Image (cartoon, rainbow, N blue to C red):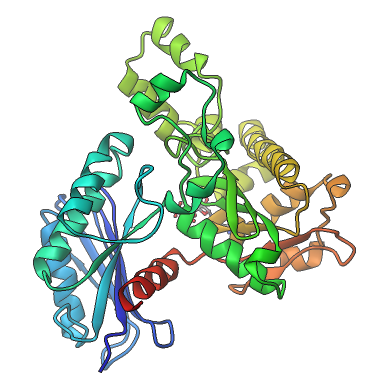
Length: 402
Ligand code: ADP
């Protein structure tokens, strides 16, 4: 029997999300998450999608740390005959947020690789520590099993130097590894390829603008399957207006807040990452709530929505200019997949760029990849649900079976 299963782990600071996939048919065998790790009310939700006990199982009980969390997950999987000791498990695929300039492709993890991921913690202090913990714990549970790191930054490593550089002193930039890395790469890779498939073309044949609009949001310009620009930078703070992040702003805002407002660097960091974006503009970060309030005439919510869409339009226009020829603009992630009003507003007025929506098609809710552009639209407008777990599983599986 050849091992064909991949366990995908996405370890956050206080949560672990996981999926077990069978790569012979890309089916899901189990999905779940542990949240509020380290609190009294930790919650594990496990859902086997095969075997004798289908249906969600939930337990609320203190789970002290990531080690205890993964052990609890392993126990749940074992109860369904899907345990980590199964010879059918081919690898664990780990989402790792920051790969720096070293990691531009999925990588089998050894001591040296793990040390390198640790050394990138200063570039991603909120994310890489949890990713490292997840790797350490999974390795301890199954030392013989290949562990693969799939990096959020990797897909953007192809950006040309002039797009990756900030226009600051080069020696200073290099001394501190300051450049534009980009994030959500696994999603941009998956969605750009799936969009080419939707158009009936090979990825090399099409130029695509991907709009990944979740709580975090980023845009990318993908030429012939290769990323040439993206909106996030050194960290996920740059670019679009997001749920709680400001996206682009004049860097002098930071000096001003420090000098005139007396805020500390950590306070400014928290302000821009956690209390800005839609939340900062109107007090809500969930687009559904922003839209509901805007529909009732709430001025702050209307401004927040308009600011979100205005920034999105600017990036669409910029990436049309970067790519020259665009075959498709594609919306994905929570907002992009579900919010017809955001898609409508983002494309509105872009007929000169060759973009026009079919309002009826745009209003249809569906989990399937689909076109929402008008027949006469020169550029296809598409909605393609992202699947980062499947992409991590595919990349991990092809690495360990090649
Ligand atoms: P992340 O992975 O970044 O946490 P998701 O891609 O799951 O985020 O997206 C979450 C966001 O999607 C929510 O914050 C919410 O604003 C948005 N969302 C989900 N459903 C809808 C909907 N029907 N209309 C508008 N926004 C939605």
